[in-house]
Image (cartoon, rainbow, N blue to C red):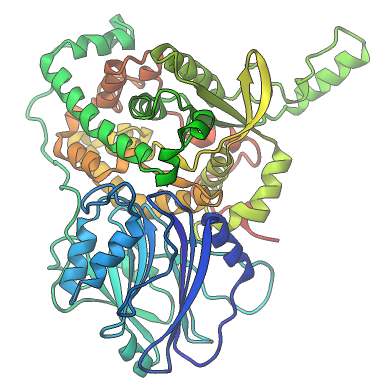
Length: 613
């Protein structure tokens, strides 16, 4: 993974680097930093490339990569399939070599279409003076853009910096839509004095104009047009199966007469269901394997140090998505290596009435109260015993039963209100930007603290400080979106049946690049760690898209059973227990960050706490 940056200047005026932005890029790529400036055949334009490398694959490869003919590549991605990459090879070098052999646009599109895995890139093609850039089909790597009309300069970057306070109007950062790849004709824009992007979309290439999503995201002062050649990238995933059942399930189900676990066991007794579950386990297990075994080449040769430190961590709530990732990671990570389970909790706030009663009890010298009573919740035993901590500990026990030989580091990450507010202003507000809702704030903060991995673990009955060393962080994003895990899916099914549910799921995947993935990549990458998304592996998405919706979920069944039904059956087949039937609980509620500050907000409201002072 890398922090990548490109500044295209169309005027002789020298643009000044934003110091904060540079620091954010360095944190993403702590292993090696390098800048390169390229001037074209026309002296009126200049490209400054800056790359900051996090070493994760093969041998450490400096970026930007300039080949023998003068082409320059910035690559923030991972190749998990599609193009062959040997264990000692670095995928950046592989992509550079492939692109160097390309003559025209169709060959460049062919190389990018073949890649299986997340990517964001910028590529200067010297022959013809072109600048290419874009993100993968699902937008799993962040790429932002803005255009400063005052200095006639376009900036592309993995992460930005939010400007604070009054002053001259600043050009707005926006996320580059994951609608395809973009090409700038540098000679043409220099002559015109303004920037036009040619879009090469994902799909058939038969669309004559750019989508509203692209047009709305284009920086002010720039223009986007569809390429006139009709060329397009090949979509890496198959279309969603939109078939609707002719009849409801003939099997009469009485979910109240059995426990949810027993009901899942009954379903697994069916050979058809069993086969469907095994097929999903096969494709999902391979997606996890690719992501936990693609680690630095040297680390694989030096086994003694890696016995003590985990190379892989999982954002872990004890819910079904993270439990399945942990169970499958256990199959592919050597038994002597630990796995870090990162569990975040925000300190429970004490209601005023409860605080007063505590004060009164102390005044009357009653029995001493618990030392943690200032954060105590009536329903819990301590200030950090939030729902995700409770389910996380239960999930840990299931994993220990599944493989007692494995060292499972359950990292209790406890966050106070004071630390949250401090770090939000110093770091997180810049990383979430340009997104700015209450939901972006809650999820962004929770993920940042979880990914940092600093907390406590229990060892021989004692709690000791611990910080995760893992550079790879697995996250369960994508499971709910594809398997009808959200409450809005149940609402839509109730109102509009399977047809409405299919439309909702189609919309979920279309918008996931702009809603979640760029933000989470920026937030996790701030720790010099890489987010990896097994549920969004192209083969997993294609497999789930191929299934009719009623095989993935049955929302006529109760909550904790019907949503993500196929995944719940998978959990049972993998040997998990009660975690297989836990209802969905969003991270902002499970970690209790949503309760820590203002309570009277909608998730879609603009979050004033993200504004820098």
